[in-house]
Amino acid sequence: MSAVVERTDRHRRILHRLPWWLAAIFLVGIAILWIFPFLWMLSASLKDNMEMFSGGLKLWPSKFVWDNYARAWNDAHFGRYLINTIVVTVITVVIVTIRCATAGYVLARYKFRGSKLFLGVLVATLFVPTGYTIIPVVKISMQLHLIDSLSGMILALSGGAYVSAILIYFGYFRQIPRELEEAALVDGAGFVRTFFSVMLPLAMPVTATVAVLTFITTWNAFFLPLVFTFSRPDLRTVSVGMQAFVGETATDWSGMAAAGVISIVPVVVLFIFMQRYFVEGISGAVKS
Amino acid sequence: MQLSRRRTDVRAVEQRPRHGWKKTTWIWIFLLPTVVLYGLYTIYPIIASYWYSLVEWNGFDSDQKFVGLSNYKEVFADPLFWNSFKVTLLFMLLVVPARVLLTLLLAMVLNSPKLPLIGVLRSAFFIPVVTTTAIIGVVMRFVLDPSTGPINSVLMKFGFSGVDFLGGQHLALPTAAVLYIWKFFGVTMIYWLAALQTIPYELYEAARIDGAGTWQLFRYITLPMLKPFLIIITVLTVEETFHNFDLMYTLTAGGPYFHTEIVEIYIYRWAFAAPIPQLGHASAAAVIFGLLVAIVGAIQLWGVYAGRRLRGEQR
Figure (cartoon, rainbow over the protein chains, first blue to last red):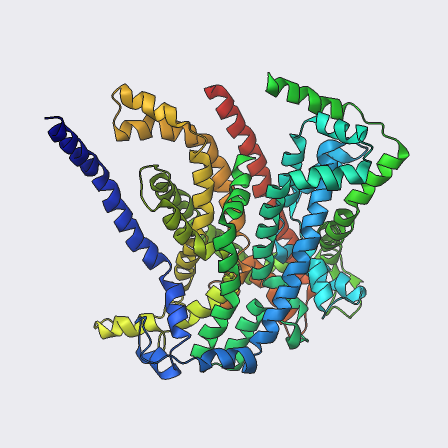
């Protein structure tokens, strides 16, 4: 008797879940369509140029042409562009993370002359577009002899507003109880030690969020790297290299697809592993 | 209890404005990297743009000659500037409703705790966001090519005539808008997920016990709770559509015949792509563009304030 009840119960539960599974299957279909351009790009990077034209949207290449990657890496210089991008991105991430952490900390924990004004100016520049600042940025980089160099590009990228990163740190340091600082003080830690050995380790999740967001922004940056490498093609980043590739060798489309895959894979891999921090950083904009 | 204690703690910090000179020095050392970099590459350019917009200046190496407001006169008299202004706003109108409303639907489905595979689905819809916009633009230019692209070869295989997605005067902007919506859909989706997660689940359970149906749950709980967020999310999305140089430049570079030339491309054309760069003219356009962004930003601050009040009233 009770077994029957149990079974109908289970049936009912499965039936209850059924619409959700149907919805999930439907959404998986849409999701595959959603990422189809990337799947197509991956497959195109392994087709030969003839098949790329005739093959339409077919995903599985009839013959795997690994040579596309060799051409993209050597002939189209994507090996070099990738190294440039990695150098620029990693150094920019380090500079931005440090400067936003220290600024956010000081602004959150100390009131000093000008602190309100400082915050006000930051918030006012939250949305400054690159198209607005680009001309003076180029001019000042020329005056400092930093145009046409990776270090100039790094400095200009690190000097972009990054207001949201400072505000994330600000919000986090603000809610740390005062006792913690006092305890550190009793232990004899000064200003700098309190920050580096007490506060910064506490803010590890925030640091991860800021670092991941900055990494992806910098890796994908296009406007500044484009303008900084006009006369130095060897300093291009992958995004600028891709644009130039199409202009220079307009016929090698499967090589282009391979170059695209080389350029995009690092960010996608990073995203898959650090997704949580990335999502947290973006939703922070709404919560605050 | 804990909350109130924390609040007094913060106040204690605020009420101690006098530090020793040593501490003040350290405060400014901590701010120094931001002051230097952000001052040099964000604040200074904003101010300098105003000066540059008042000079005649043909090339970064050449001299600047003060000409008063004549750059502004030229910009205002240039039909192509108003064209780029119009394209920027039109693009915003095409993109924002879709991004804000369609993402809300998807976010509500993806917020349901009963949905299987929820993590995988969220990631899939988010992946376009993290990929490089400029590369998407270049690849899509090939994919949508009227003679060699795969989309058109499939269309023709099924007997349709080929479509020149990016070359057609009336089709180029909507095509770019669709790609843009696809690329940044995930951002707004995350905004909405964050907003939805502020609604306590118990509220739904309590309402369901009282006999409320799905539509009623949506109408009387979800919708009112989301109203304050709608303002913030809409304006965040509007602001983001102003930063669209990467996609537009790689996709169409403003063509065909300026039909997709947004203000950022207009500035770029006058400053970097012209045979004789007209940096004063470009700066004047940049200042006007900056004012547009600032006005929307001001509306946002007002919107956030109004949103707070709305939320306050509900409590």
